[in-house]
Image 1 (spheres, one colour):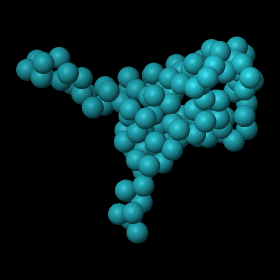
Image 2 (image 1 turned 135 degrees about the vertical axis):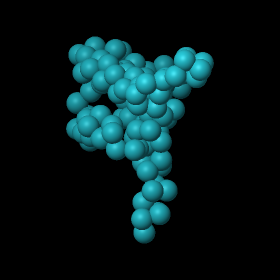
Image 3 (image 1 turned 180 degrees about the horizontal axis):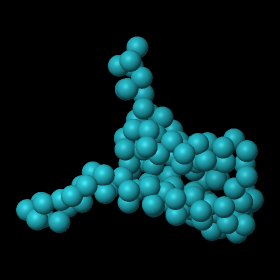
Amino acid sequence: SSSSSSDGGRVSTEDAREILLEALDGVLCASRSPSPSVARGACVAVMRLLETNAAAVASGRFDAACAHLLDAYRSGTIAAPPPHALRRGQEPVSTILARGLAAVAAAREPASEADA
């Protein structure tokens, strides 16, 4: 994963994947916080990373991170503020995780249609 000096300082695709993987690992770690506000904030960060980079995440390299998120969604193990503590317009953790996972699932959909 080398980049030429004439590329304007852009990172290679492989380097970008590594950066994304590190970012996901960091926010997944924060999502395990016992503090509901920290864990919820981490879930928002994960959702934004997944929505913004859905095609890259759907490529398969991030399956472990997606599996962790899916497990957390199914089990409800992420510390979450109680619904009455959310400000108007704030979504619960389950909705935040569902939005991120849905973005990845939607990005995978065209590939599965092509296989059919």
